Image (tube, rainbow, N blue to C red):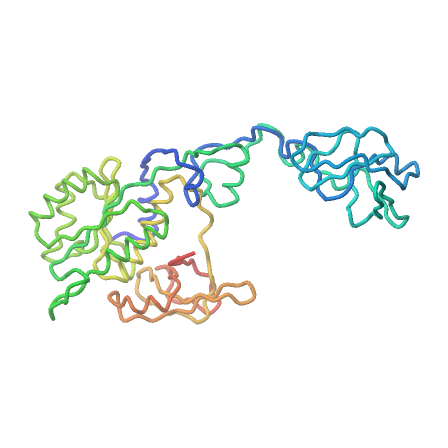
Length: 399
């Protein structure tokens, strides 16, 4: 067996690029940007009025002018108007272009309005360029606004729209097959016999993948039959970029998946990690295909999925990843085995600090206990005691 740190190193050494595709901006939320976005004009593109009010000459006010004739109104979206006389003013709207000859905007609330005049009270003081958002003051033309690797959110979509990107280059998602193995599994609509269980892992894995924006997922089920597995692998490896097996990877007489994969030309990266739960995890690669063999026990399967599969799929999509989240323990944990412990926790936020309360389980088959948790923490194998308040790495079931 290898350590968790060794597993991370091996996984991070894998380089696969499933390519780039173009999608409509309306479908881009949550995708990984794969191009550099550069401003095609100044931001803002003109001297922009930042307040509803009246644009006028600051010099005229400095010279004692307090009453200004309203020349006309300029709405946002209208062409630029020129001030004809420095004792005139022009009504303006937020977001519109600043009239030529004006260098000050006074708020509507600060003036006294007459039918064709505005009067500036003595109590109001003006400043040169007040309430004006100057052209290029945010970003000049040809500035890099977004870099490849950013995850597109509504704010990024706003920038894409601002530079006219109606189609966007993003990471192409892998086509994924989820394959549950085991003679004991029956479809969920069936009534299992007393020696059978309903299939659940495929639903858990598919749901977690879709929650993380991997939508091209197909699910299959295989009996513990080596010939059937061997034949099915030909199809899976020809049609899918990522295979995620559930079950059949431990040390039992009918755990055929590692042998069948090796015979099919898949190179084993590693098999078995010094951790609990999820020790039997198997990982391999064939050309641009990545294969994971998850343990059959449901807690082990979902924990390995979140700890290893999802982070590395996102990494291979060239997603820019932030630092791993941490939380503080509300109670101590003792774990004296020389294994990394992945322990479920309930997360609460108290005065801006996230705390994790350890959740006890009845082993790696106790999926119900995970419904009481928000994720799991990682307790390093090098330590056997984690006191209350200890800072722990956390992996959340959902953001």
